Length: 410
Ligand code: HEM
Image (cartoon, rainbow, N blue to C red):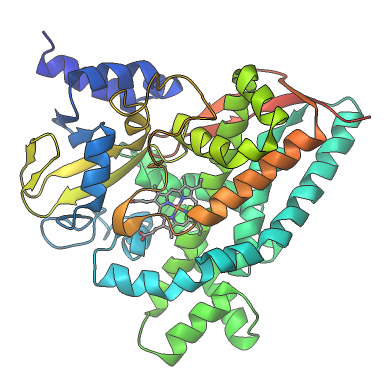
């Protein structure tokens, strides 16, 4: 019989460094035990697909805490939590609705479609450089040369940041995003706070510059919304820009890195995709399921909630929703541990669900389809040159190094 202590130790394993290397077996054990698991230190861990989806859609489940304050605690002492708490990501309606409406326009399918040529140009430039190095017989780290620089440049261009400003943000965003982690230590929080201060200073400078010299970019559009109406405070303007940049960059980076690695580790699936590039949209959905960048999202119950299986969760309970586990739920996905680019069993939860459904899902999908397609077209053979290195964080799952050997076309 499984005891409370066994369950707690499984949850601990899942959230710690060892468990993160290979969470699949822990997901399997948790699924066998049920859909939602009580934990003394995180409230409830939600692992089933059905419960995760239902909770993210439930209007009585949100982000604010029982005292009515925004979701991340101790914002008075932590700049990083203060920053995120001011954004739509951590807001409930009506603030959420107001903030999201201001930027919706920039992410409609049409607006995203308009970015296609820019993205294709950036991919070509990156792959030209990689081709040169591969032709000279060098192994290439695809995180350094592709997965980091591409999404940061795409979102940077959209926001209106000069390309030359972008390189320091790789470290800054890595430091800041640990604030979404369920378990952080003091050193990580200090680094996140310092990154938050640097980001807000940077965007204050960019806003000053665009107020003086408007351009056709998202920063200028948000300044107009701020200055011509009463829809956004100055602090919300700066935190909105920080959020778009944070949310649009690292997640996409890790979709690219995790996706390439999954394909390299499943040569049969890679061969299938090479043989029929029209399978790309379905392959991207499966890569998003198989090893997704956003492992967890958090919520708090604002009323007593009943789940589809009849489980009742009382009001004011913290929920850690494991999207990673939901994607390996055997009640929904047959042999979830297998990568199958033809799979069509349930929509991905990678972009969340309900009112916080990812604003940039269309952009992320477009970037991934274009970059995987072009990478496979240019290089008829790609093999791992050394073991990849993993970034350890239980909110964002990704790689720091992905060294490969590439054969170029003659
Ligand atoms: C929200 C995942 C790319 C902007 C979310 C959420 C998830 C997610 C899971 C919901 C969080 C929650 O419910 O608490 C991803 C993944 C991406 C990606 C896996 C790439 C593979 C992007 C891009 C942008 C973006 C390119 C562009 C700016 C946002 C924003 C929100 C959000 C602004 C907050 C929406 C809201 O609270 O209403 N994303 N995202 N994301 N995402 Fe993404």
